[in-house]
Length: 454
View (cartoon, helix red, strand yellow):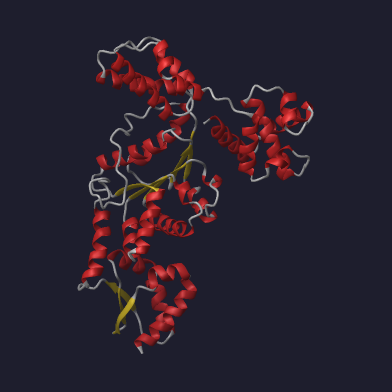
């Protein structure tokens, strides 16, 4: 009779909680006893016991009552006796979750190792990144969650990973017992697939949902992976429900990540979304000055001529990694040949980097990137069609061609299917007017500019 009642209740719960919740939380339950008004269930893990008790106990009680069982209370317990294999399967994620704050201490930990160089002290703050730095600092203080998640986005080498590592270091220093887990989206996906393959999905859920701070880098890599997105969504919700902090990074804003589910985009946008802008001259110079001070300790005999750092900050505008790599090469080369670091030496040693940094953006490249971004055909970009879905991207491409190249209006017109220069002027003015009132268009322009200049 007990099994019949529970079988009916399971069917009803499948309808009320949905297929995914049922598979994750209800299906693993095993009805142990139903007596004295108490229904006792066996559950595989303590985490699942707490979660089901908090979220599904009352529903289960109500459904049992409807099928004629006299139930006043529902209890869940983890069996004390386990078969060897399940115990072993659960041991690994439990150990990982306990040691999560010390990412990199144990080969079995789920997180990526933290880079000791990436701290707040070594992060150079400038106008392009001051908001992101301030937000990361606030989270690192470890106080009440004020914005969740914190979403950092920007191009390559602008400091997203540095800030995430800095937050993790600071939290672990302030609160050593805090469970901080930092990993890439690719690692999250790998762990999930591994758990599916080894039938340890409950251990995976327990491990990821028992952390205090979850940090996922480059989240754009889960776009298009349906099962991984599903699990990420549920993990995200579970942590937010427990008021746990989440920090996410990506190369673009949540709404611009293609093939990412709308519900995940919505969740990511509900916190604080911060853009790390491309570096300006002052910030690049500050970064070079800080790195040069470090290198002076390693190469005390080397002399650095005036104007070299200013020259590099002006010429190398791609990203911070290229900038730092250029300085590293310069100091290493000068120490090997025993020469002072002069402007001539810098130009000779870094000739390939300087040439790459001088790359000019072409109109054809602009047209291709804009067509890809707006998902239209390149032939329509230069063709005669005037429907809004094509005309607006075409005007955006005209505007970028004018601002990012030195081509004249007639020349731009010829590249856009032989259009008159007055048509090009009209398109440019239209975009200039709209970008002040249309936030989406302004964001599109900023992202396209970063893609083209990076």
